[in-house]
Length: 153
Image 1 (cartoon, rainbow, N blue to C red):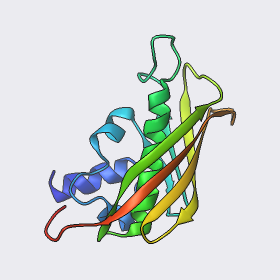
Image 2: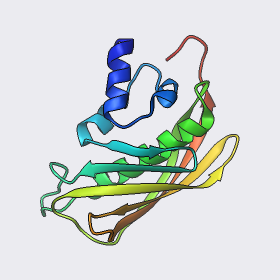
Image 3: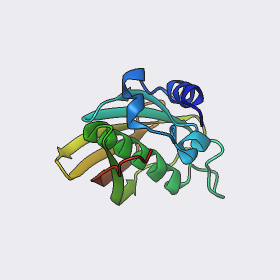
Image 4: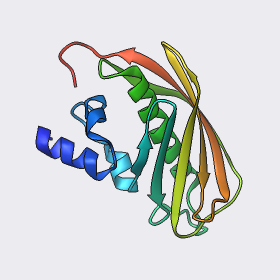
């Protein structure tokens, strides 16, 4: 992905230009792109993004529990990467999610709040809600912060 395409993709997914350096080389990531995730707010302490329910439903017609986890980990890992800065990156080491309500159509909003922003670990809570503000699921995500190897993106 060239620099212009990289920047365009990040902007299309709601990442502010001043944070583009947090995403060296890989853009928003293939899974977030495929899931239709769009950031509306992004900082180490709070990140918000939306995701359409379709086509990520399970055979019963409701949003797949794994899709909730994809949104949660995308939000928490991205917020952790913003906290880490461009010289480091976040690696998810733990996620747990409790599903409170199903949703079969519309848009899910994930709101990620930092519980701990340390030098080597971050912990975020992510609450997914429907368009009416009803809680769909709650996740907690822990990320390990690692140094980038020189010359890698």
